[in-house]
Image 1 (spheres, rainbow, N blue to C red):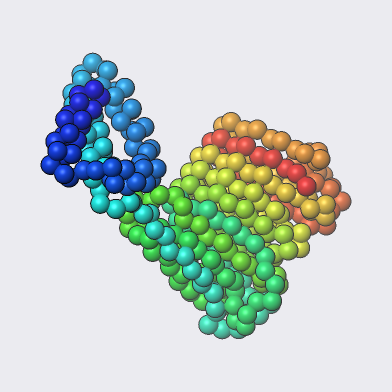
Image 2: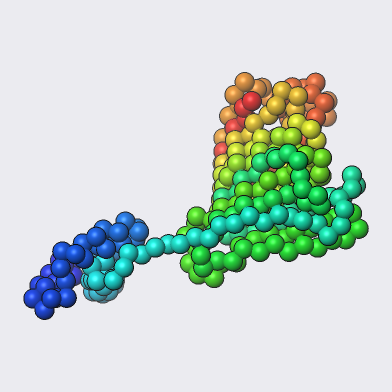
Length: 294
């Protein structure tokens, strides 16, 4: 570390004498540092590893990396700007949606915030609306496939360069349409407000999941979540009960204003045992944090 800083000061002195650097470069330094400061954690990690016998050579690599980073901060001509693109996509169907039509939404993104909400008055032949914000280097796509009474949309984000994790999707669904939803990715989080939505089933498959879920009060749904780590806050309307199956290596269950009861077949029921709408929730994760509240 001292070796890199010593060389840096020597070169900065030379650059100042030659007129390549001035105080006018400081604003760029500040802007670029605020955008890239997590790299310091990498330098600290390499420094710690260099203390291990047989890895002493890493301190020289670290010195070169630190030196290059400092020069980059000072001499890069303009502030770094991580740009994003946003837009709205209406899920227009090729045919007329009938009462027997099922709309399947298959969403795939490695790192994404996914929110679902209900909106009224759908446009003609529309199965929903998606608002998106993605990294400028990534590509957003929607592909439609229709067969019999099933309209399927494959929705995703193609990552063409290093993902920074600020991708987000807002999925607006309409009442009166029957949906099936699959969420697939590496790290997924968001707010899934399904209250008032006819949802047949939802599948969440991700390494890390963190979701607030408002269960539908108009249609019995089946939810299955599978992954490594899951944190879920489930909100139950008074007229809804859920049958819960939890399979996790480590788990924590929190119930606020609810008690767990046993059904006639020995199943675990949470919510009003007399409620007419019964949904099924299955969680298969290595680590599970699950909270129920109204």
